[in-house]
Image 1 (spheres, one colour):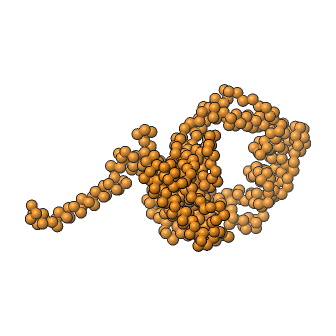
Image 2 (spheres, one colour):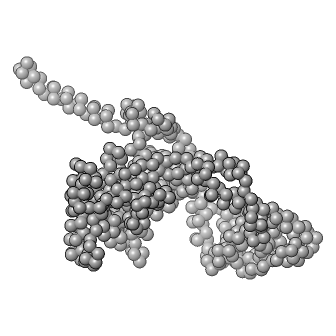
Image 3 (cartoon, helix red, strand yellow):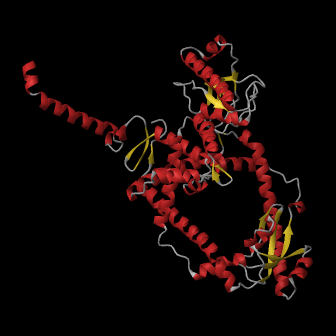
Length: 506
């Protein structure tokens, strides 16, 4: 037998090598069909398996993108919805589609491009210059507690670059016409307006809300009335004695390192024992947070024992809590400011629908506000109808308003482009953007009820001024058109991705 083996050794080793290569391709290639039937599958995209790990990874990218203030990336991929679940769902699926399409189009940001993009982020700048200290502080306070590394930061920047490049590719045919330019140039024309207000103060304050209205509100908005998942953690802290931490320099670094070493040693000790017993053996006090959501916000009225940590620390503890599980309930040493923590998962409260009684107080407020706004709009519509009739009869706007029992206010030389208007004046000027002199707007909601605008006059646009402003106007119009085209492209690309989710409980 040994003789046969030796005789055919080279052939057999070649066969083993080939089989090993095939095994690696088969087992680790995400596009192989065996992955589609895996027990960890939560859905499919482009015909391949989508796991919970894929989803969790993109959730972390979403949270990191928020911390990095990448609002274009988040907004263009649908991550700005008011409902957190809807925002996450849209962002994750659209990001997966974007990455796939970028690969198909050969869009791959280089390391140099990623590094240059990181240096431009406002969160890393001081005086409009890249500040390495801010970068180091961010990686320490924002990445570490979330269980992330600089690799994830670079991936978010790579996603932002992919988005920019694909938007440019998709929107390449876009151009700005002369008509669009002239229409947008209205922002530089000064207008004289008269304004009539319809304040909330004229509406009865005690507007009743019935039980039927509350039930109807609850039924209508029930899918969005969700209490978020919350978690609480038991924790011990390692803090320098009050007033004994050096202000700066090597001594401070060494003191913090001692605290970090102590926290790490405790985490190792607690891993082989119960958290409470390990704390007692080390002479440490175990504290417990209230129920926290992912942002570190307390989500329950029962806050005993009351968390004594500051908001930033609670945010870091919450970030750690949502990385733990029943199988792995203990964290490593975490730093928050000048303290170190080790946390243990204490309680998980899953996301759940809110009850009608929990919704009732907010429902009453919102229903009453909607009824008040509706009443203001009805009164305004009736008054504006009288004003328009009076204008048709030859009266001036001021006289028509006075005849309706209201008062007109005059504002002159309002221009949206100047940057010197108050928010209210900007709203007045914006209302006239598509109006011609002599026209009255409809009712427009405002901070205290609403208003309507009458356009007295619009100053003519100086051709020389238009030429000067053209370079400022065109990029904005072009960016808007490209964004609309990109969203249309993204919708088609997402449809082609054939995204499907596995039923709950699969």
